[in-house]
Length: 209
Picture 1: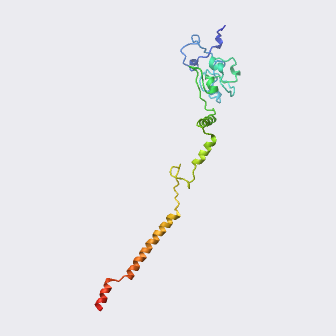
Picture 2 (picture 1 turned 180 degrees about the vertical axis):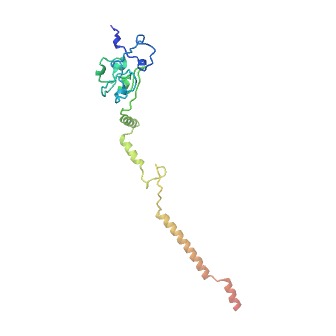
Picture 3 (picture 1 turned 90 degrees about the vertical axis):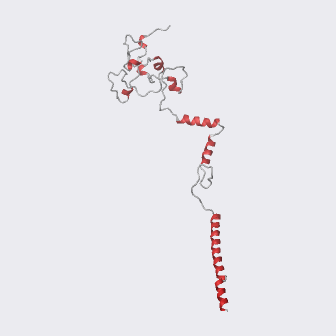
């Protein structure tokens, strides 16, 4: 049979924040901030930088601890107190351990911590997406190598087009042929003028005769 133990009542969070409208006698939660029911002062743990007058959180250094204490988070009380090897924080233990919470209507905070390894998870999800599409990691390497097309083989529609143009030999030979043709035409015109008879010269000859 369940027996109510007044010494194991959870702490009043409004009391810790200094805004509980009730007294210790009228409040249904505890106003006694012991290490078994109260989280440690994080500011004091940070090189003793707590400047709050009459801080209700215990000023104790216990060293780094991993994980969330389920008894403290869910029940609000842990019998181990300072000897507990997990953190006494008001946080969802399932979400802290698995990254997901299956409790419907969970009232505990779901905290996303920055020190979680996200890059490997992102890489695994990317590979799984590739496998779903029917590809493989080797195909991704091949695709990445194909994307780096050389400037000589670049064509319209590639990722980039080289701005350095190499003049072809056929184009230069055509231009030289055009220049040679123009010079030949000019020389031909000069020869025609020298070989042709000037009408004025014919008249002079006729008059002298």
